[in-house]
Length: 307
Image 1 (cartoon, rainbow, N blue to C red):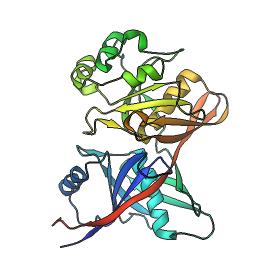
Image 2 (cartoon, rainbow, N blue to C red):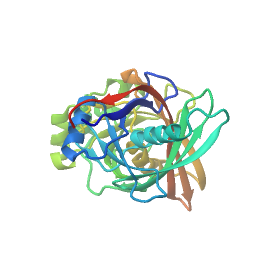
Image 3 (tube, rainbow, N blue to C red):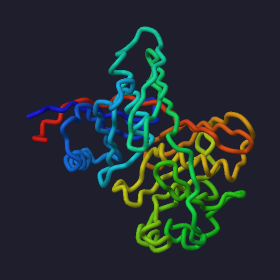
Image 4 (tube, helix red, strand yellow):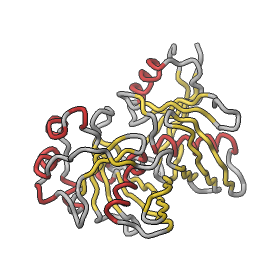
């Protein structure tokens, strides 16, 4: 029976028992898709990563990412957490700070992550998003239908010039702006009404956000309600943050240059998370984006099952 080592990390946080938990199985060779899905259901975290040898010798590893319900082509907190773990596995606990590059092969493509290892501090990773966000064509449901599906009033939907929209940067999401922290705190997704409003084929998971924040250094406060991943609500969603860059570009029209924003998420779940989103704008167009955050190890062990 092969014993497979795993590590659990909290991601998008610099302290334990916050952020978004992630399981990483480091010895995944020989596992079938069905077995990986079974293991992901056993961990029952928002995502579990399985690490394989890279196809290219210059790359660090190949990854497959599973929620308890299905496989994903890309996800942000697994990318950050696995980059941190691979760098720590390679360099250990250095006496001096180290900047490292980790290249991971995901289904969506090869992803480069810059990792900063600092003695006495949580390791930080920032990756180049594999795709720029693209708008998803088609009309959004009306404010009333969206509000009903979220347990809100129609007046709660939208702020400034922000209106509901859909974007995809590897995983599609619906984005719903709400008035303030009070409204986002009251939000509760009804999957039946959400599916009825969109049609089940288009009822993507929903990223609800507002401009009002808990922390003074955050630009947006957010919650992500699952529709189809099997996780309910997610405390930190890097793939949604990548797609959210399309929302920021469309509605806030950032000026030429680099713009670094922090998104706070997971506060209502007692899992405060901070996601760094960097946009590069040229001639009003988004030309590149990066997602970053810290991660800390929580547990290590071995899978002793027959798989």
